[in-house]
Image (cartoon, rainbow, N blue to C red; front, side, top):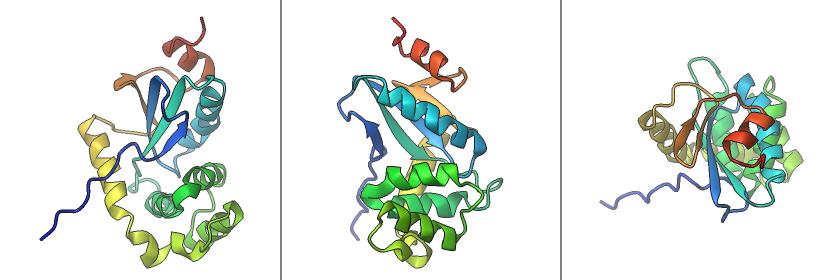
Length: 170
């Protein structure tokens, strides 16, 4: 029996992959707080001159958000269109049923939009489970939960506070 390959927990990097500062977000694509945090984090990274990167890890709160897991699977199945689809899903959290996911996938250019739902997307369960398990091990209880260079960030997800915490307001 061969062992399954290890899942790269840092597979979803937004920004400069070599940035000296890493912000890890444990998030849920259906969580309204994550949806509100997304443009803030996007702006933080875009304005950092390559000094900060964002790593996204799935932490679907499926007990509270019925489409969180299917949205996570769809984003994973989108492959190199992960970030494009994730941003769209954050903006359209009230439309995350399978037909909606396929429409969003088509809009961001996923070659086979049907591949982000159903049986095809189930192949990405191990990646979601690995992210979730890493979050549980790190003490994540809700979303969004941020870590800055492996330290829990307890402040608000606001641009000014994040820039201060990262030492970027100097």
